[in-house]
Amino acid sequence: MARIVMKFGGTSVADLDRIRNVAARVKREVEAGHQVAVVVSAMAGVTNQLVKWCQDLSPLHDAREYDTVVATGEQVTTGLTAIALQAIGVDARSWQGWQVPIVTDQAHGKARVEHIDGSVLIERMEAGQVPVIAGFQGIENQRHRITTLGRGGSDLSAVAIAAAVKADRCDIYTDVDGIYTTDPRIVPRARKLERISFEEMLELASVGAKVLQTRSVELAMKLGVRVQVVSSFEDKPGSLVVDEDEIVEQPVVSGIAYSRDDAKVTLRRLPDRPGVAAKVFGALAKANVNVDMIVQNIGADGMTDMTFTVGKADLARAQDVIGKAREELGFEALLADPDVAKISVVGIGMRSHAGVANTMFKALAEKGINIQVISTSEIKVSVLVAADYTELAVRALHSAYGLDAPA
Image (cartoon, rainbow, N blue to C red):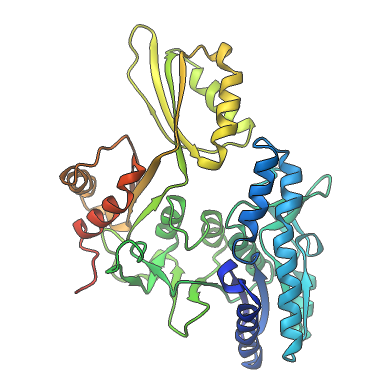
């Protein structure tokens, strides 16, 4: 007997037939003798609609009220899934984030999980009941308001709950049957990975791979939660995210990721003096705006240009924050460009192989793709390019690193 957390994303619970399919999968695990907890997302498209309503009313809406609105999608799904399970003879009960409770900090819209007491969930599971838990949401630690964990936060909920109930495995059910070397919709010859390390998956998720949310992988790596990505619609082997030591042969490059969710911000003619960068990024941090790639040009005449990227959803807030600080910062102009894409090459093998970046730059140059910004880590190289070149860049790099499956 194993203790398993099964997480189902929005496409897996998109309508009543798919919710019935979820219930049938859960019942199979229960009948196999396993203790099961279920984590669900909102039905496909629901969260997008709720977010749009908030943005249409006010682009700079109160994040606390935003959380109140967008958390409702998961509440509906938990109730429907519990009803579907009960209808086929499985003892199930819905749980909202505040009922567990999933305690978070106060960063509304992108809260971090601080604590989950899994004792009551364990009691229910040992008694044969299936808890159906709302992903994506929690309750903040002081004023007890509803919080949400950021887009894709149901993955984070599932991993955190798996750790809290000491689960043997956390299965993430989605509309793909595993983790691929890149998006198969762009590169039909992309290959499914049987195993990938936590570190590689963390980098891929952080730079745009949509299979798992970044913070969920980070938490899984920290807490040692084995994660499996499997299809909700096909009975096929999935992909395991495991410790690096479990991977016998480590390829130089494991995958190519892309993200169209970034926007580029440039501050023209910013005074080139100590502390100016701290003021810029301190103001953004205070507003809970995450900054990713950063480039500062060599100063001339006491002035410099600084370019950085933020999430496209945070662009209006970033412009507002920086605009209000213009007099203090002393820059000449703020330029924003949302029509960019971040393309990344990831692989543990980069640690011991030279020339990985050069292969990337050469492949893009041969396709006439201009690189706007570059950033690197030990196992990743990312570039920012014009959004129109996204698919061309991904296909070129997938071939350049020999990742294409045999024809």
